[in-house]
Length: 272
Image (cartoon, rainbow, N blue to C red):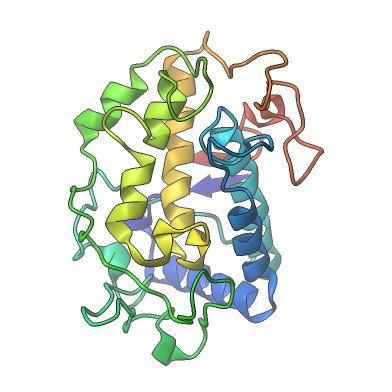
């Protein structure tokens, strides 16, 4: 069983193996398929189609399945690789080890946001951004330029204390744990990290930045923590609701996985 570790505790060899597996998925074209899938499921509240990946109750199970698929792709390259998570309540500055040249590389330069250090820098020649929203083909970041600092542990704990998973109107106006974790209400957790990193992370093609996976791995861990804290609470809505994926309805694009299938992660992976 996979054990997902805090990236701050990875050994040099574990960092290298993770990076090399990501680069191989990029080289063989599988990585960009994940970027395309994510971009296709950025749903707004005004869409007439069913919301799946964002602004809806299925935000968490959809990304849990998405991360599992990516982790399995990594393991097809190196069976020992698992997804690490980034605890941004602790590693909260542009000088944190996650941004080291031996791992994800650092900030973008002030002139154009281009990342110039680490294995994903354009100068390394292995990370051309091909699924993009503009003409720029290089990885961009603007760490901390979005205004608000990264969330604190106290802010996270305030969201984990919410006992109800989600509630009507089941979108970005909803109260409850899911929407506060996603960041459309309250202290703003998940969304704030995308803005703090900047660059492609502020767009639908956010997986172009490999930090996407470490950020969402921590979001998944927080959901797992919430599940442990509230064992009698579960995914809502439980039954058919217009434009919303309910508990036993299949999620696109897979059409073989429901939120109910994603509630128990412990048979697939655990968190260190």
